[in-house]
Image (cartoon, rainbow, N blue to C red; front, side):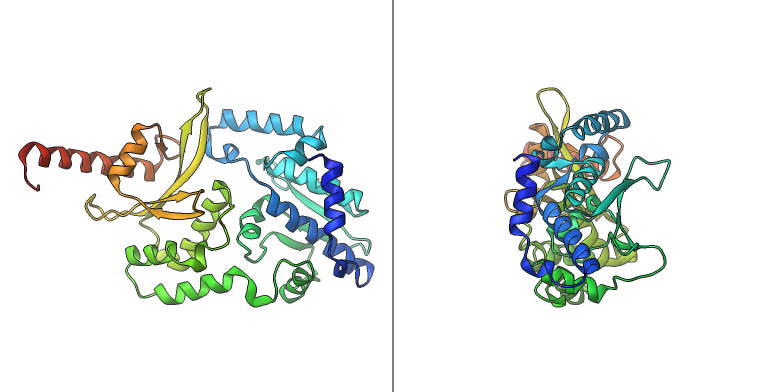
Length: 329
């Protein structure tokens, strides 16, 4: 798909309700519609966050080159904050809405968009940070008003999101389902709570097409919120990768587990993009995946990766001992 084809499709599918209201309301709804549309289409290039500094710089340099050709940005699924902000800006500019790119932290490469409405008021938005929210139909966290005047309170934002078809009503956010799961598991031990969370259709239904980076953020957010700071301190989550033909890491899943302190009672879960959810896995299966080239953690120093490799080794030593001696250890 070229940039012009993407723009034509956005305009063609734009709901008629977007054009109702005064100029500022129409502009806000247009910016929201493009925000949601791109948020459903694109995902984060995980190499920017899960690799080393050298690799991250290479991705950034490639991103800057990509931004010279809008057709590349329209065609690519995996983008960085720079490329998705640039694509968003160009689409809004073509729709007659003033939009620019800003970097608010001189120590970081991360960029956002500032939207200037015809009224003079502004919006500060971060589409890359909201991708996981959009793809799981949660409340937006990074579409905010600029300055001290909050002219877009949550109820008004929800109303606009209803008009563009993102939600049916305020109860349609996935946040409501997550809250119900939280209430059900609040008194369960952590291990049982995690099993209930990842096994709940309220958590995994509807995210079957989510890419690994957004799924990782989604499950991290959900588990952190449901368990709270006190109960999630022994819970580890980390990306897993394989090496491609050029020996570059390609992240294709992630692992979550509570550190029980004993390989016998450990229950790890791996994300399956095919099934669109976390699946229970045993240590022997993880060992086989490891032998096939799966690396645990974004580096050898990953705490979760170190622990899971130790438990895999403990389980293997115990299994070999039992096999050699013909009895349970």
